[in-house]
Image (cartoon, rainbow, N blue to C red; front, side, top):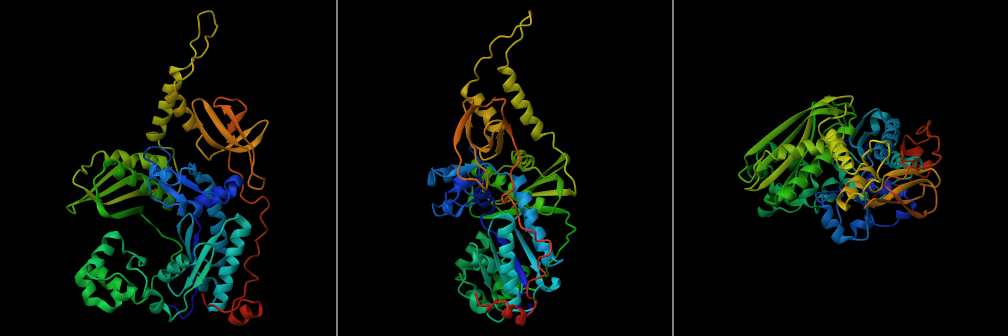
Length: 485
């Protein structure tokens, strides 16, 4: 533990959904859901407006549609999210050489190592300066937590949400943590939380009062020791800038065993997307996809598939994980699922299994409706595709929310597609809400486009953060103020 709150945790607010709202003026202030839109789709991120309606990440999209039928449902645009993430991480790198990214939208920063803070006032000033810089450069908001350890800094950023800053002063940790749920502590998932609840422990105070010996008895030696230290607010983990990771993985333990095969498949796909987020956040790709399944009887099975080359494509990883799931018997119930990628590399290579399969399917369906060429060189009229084929072609070529450009109408985004038509709203991040037009899916003037920057002319932050105060006296003279939450 440090004597000053010089470890910073940044968490961008509803990152994917906020980026979509910033990109699309007509969606600002409205419910937006980003994720898979198919029958097995899962919500990746929901805007705060959608969250008020009960929608949250990891929820099946079909359930989200029932809760928020009028929300905008969009397919993720990872190229945009990665660009914005790079901008944010570049700002963090200016604060310290010790930046530990956790995903595209989340990172720890050691302010002391960068000389940008050495006490509460200067740490607060740095945090506020970072939030202002992120807003100016990306147009988005981020929540900042400051504390003397990584665990507490992450808890502080949760307390700061949305769009705020929260400081946990050294010496106040136990008082702050005492009434909080045990689930706030790292490593306490639904299963462990339920186990502790049955033992009469629901708050962090309960854990501290129980004592180390009792926690070791309940959850085992390794976990019990760590859990007791965390309950006391103790965490000595350093911020690690570079990790020579051999794999990237995510996993979830479920409160109740999963028996529904469709739900299991949806959870695997959601975990695959989360895994790719971490993979991209580490600037890596991987060649082998690993599926982990812990069944109702605590037996654990792992399956793996090695691709032809490294990838960081969420579709490739998701489909590989889905294929692996087909070889696992889950009829008795599943208590834990995990998806990982190993064989890491610093470059990517298109996977020919999943993506070529998509291309073959599209080509085959399109061939069925291609006009045959007559012997005299003439061409018969092409038959209209059936509704299912048109829906497939439109969904694959024109994903909802993705960028397009029309030769006459300019830049826009896909509101929806199907039955041979695609509906586009023409607007830019810095324009007023635009008009909506509908085209045939094969309109030659309408083409896919790259995302536009969220801020038209970002300010120059090349000299930042040289002007930030480095000490209490500097912070107070510049109006930094007190450091209470």
